[in-house]
Length: 153
Image 1: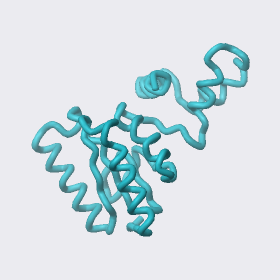
Image 2: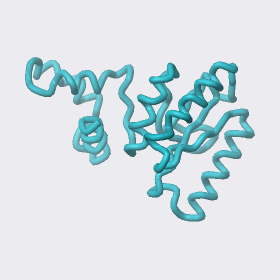
Image 3: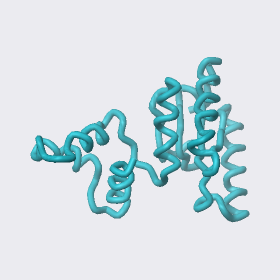
Image 4: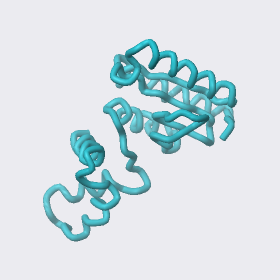
């Protein structure tokens, strides 16, 4: 997880782009650290994350057999942390940094209402719940997937 945090931070600070870094790894074949970096940056599975919460949720979702979610994408006019368009499920990883003030919390409620109005299932995972209980949210998504939940796209 440290390597993933380092890559995300470097990207956030415009020090390196993950896709450019991945493309350059062939020049360093056999060097220490290249194999784990190549595995991490696999274009089919790597997703940039703003927080440790987001980084923790992806393997939990994979662990219950969910498809790879879209991350940091716009849905119904709001940026969301995780989105499974084929399931109509949106998850917000609510750390205090972005959900502390009354106005931030109000916006979160408005976002949830927009998703519900579009026929989607919005779920939240608070920092204190992750990773201990975030697996419950992943299992909830798995249960919704089993019911064939289809949301608006």
